Image (cartoon, rainbow, N blue to C red):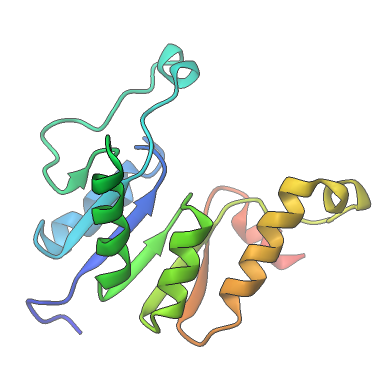
Length: 158
């Protein structure tokens, strides 16, 4: 699977400095023609005030947030067509379409699955919708979850 045509895309909502080091490592190993990051949103103003910034312009392997529906559609199709996709904060329609393609997909899971899942969390409609979407996506042989973040080992062990 390491041929010239093999491609990996990472889809997420915004450029995140927490992920920058491993994204740069993927790029160093695979190159711009085989590894790309596709961003789907601009940095919100609240985060800009905290010092967050858009992707550095020198990173030609990072596709900036789409400005039009056409650009969004192109990113969506690129995610579905890639040989392998790693999905971070990604819209449900893209996640389900990619999972249905039968191609390899890794879904990064931060703390959404942390325990205990109390009745209060289950009552939250946003959490229930997210969990339902993950269940519909995950019951496929081509879908795998990557636990990410500082607390991932602890969350997964409980």
